[in-house]
Image (tube, rainbow, N blue to C red; front, side, top):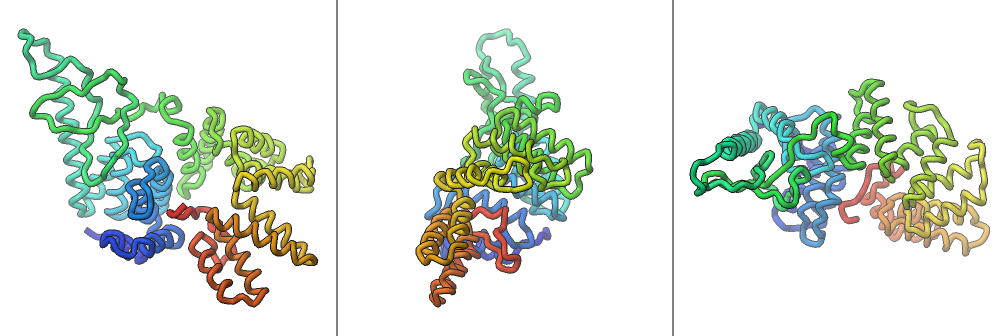
Length: 404
């Protein structure tokens, strides 16, 4: 079995497996997710860490889903090897992300991985087939009307499909298709398995998937390099559907796109404003900041600097890191008063504490101007650890530290 793996990811995984230098291992894995050569594997490992937890980091299964989703998005952009395909199989087998469990897709990727020499994937594919065959056997027995009342099979609803959980702890059950009163039919010869739902049929996708799942599908269609223009247009429609169903994130995305940050839709500041206002009404501090910036755009057609500034202040009060950093920039520009520089520094510190590497870089620049070179170096290190890319001079938009 041959596969490639980023050196930082490999080293970090080894540290975690050895139970030594946990913090250093997490930093290496986090670095590989930002700059590594095998980002799909890196995001998948970040998802596993957040899902299962490590010493000093509490397990957060629900939060881990978006990292698994990010891993899948990366897998489809890379030339997949056996490990990539096995992890794709795990994603659909165990319902690790926001997609529903889909045994058919899991088998597809496990079989592909097995054909590339992965014995673990082959074993998992065999377990799925075995469990599905067992389910069919249970169904056949239940369909027979026994003459005698003594039977090993209960009258409870049989499991729609089953997957043996191997090597993954605390896998969340995907039992939405089974009612609370349903029970698993039992036969002594059938192995204990975790109930999962049947794959969702095409005509019921919008009903079965939650709004975040719709949004993930939309983003994949929009961002996938292999997507056609029609695929991307379909992605926009999915994002709108998610927004109509109440998704806060979809409203922010649509506001961002109509602001002119995509060639997929015509720039329309009024439409962008509508979506941002919708997201704000749903509680988005990010949309509040973006809407404030839009009001401060002199060519928007509805420029109102005072209103824009107030929206940004409100977003900062809610703790949104980019809004805090923006206020730091505002006070930093007023260098005629030394007190303003100190206020600026405090806003940057608040933004940095919330995981924004750019803010630590700004602090480092102020440190350097004060000849506090050691402190400046320290803050630049913090900046790099939190997603600031010094070569490009920007914050990595995909960065989210596993420590947050």
